Length: 359
Image 1 (cartoon, rainbow, N blue to C red):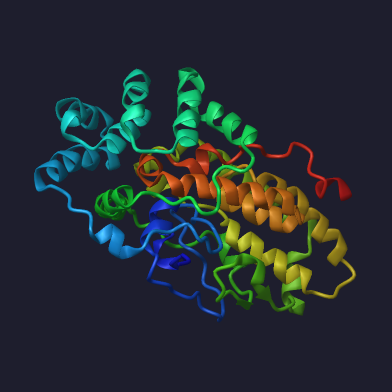
Image 2 (cartoon, rainbow, N blue to C red; image 1 turned 90 degrees about the vertical axis):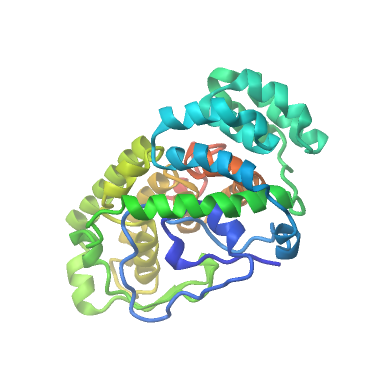
């Protein structure tokens, strides 16, 4: 069973969206594009075959007492009350499933306890060894994870799936996260002026695979307004500001909800497709300008890296991003509390792209 993204869930973390929409697919409108929501970078990407049948998830029975204690920890966590969440975890951790304990240990940097509980989790030997090696370097677990993934170039395999128990708990806990995200929203949904400037492209975006998106050529007014060095300079500067800010605040849901992006990566990608479709003497010049923008896009999160790769035509790195995504989906509970799409965004990122060298 394949998964598709819902555009209404752009504010939810990557893994929650991909694991919870296994049977509910929503196509994107193939009409005049409205600016995406600006509160948060949207999740990735195209379809993936990592899934678990819903009946297997629904068959999992969650004890009400355990649920209450787990919720008492995750509710303040999703509301950025780390102190209260830690206190609840300290009181109730013994009653929690091992996988939840492990995820929270990683979030709260209880690495010694995580190492102790790791053998009790029913993971395969390669998965257990990967985490054991990463936790052996407690001061840089994320970097160690990246190193492990670089060394094990075939991990995770396409057929690896999250456990039904992990998905059942993810389904329960994601409801708390969705509510918290909703409560944090502010009145900042109006798009930026830059986003509004690029909102009039007509694109076919019904496919969940970004590679199949198409945009019609720019009209004369758009060419006159957008084919300017000053405009591309402003676009690139605003994009860099978004990346820098979101990389600093992505762990804080309150700050993320209050931040309004200047330009979304999806809008940049649609702008690129429209320029690519435009037969004009300046087309080549401004397609080259997109390459420098794309190189920066790849540093933000999985989606930015993926769309940047498509602009750069870097198929080799597309494969890497898809593998990083599979890793993130494989551990949905961990991904609820550690945003791998940001933490691992630059893992194995090529320093000097072959595509970029064409400029």
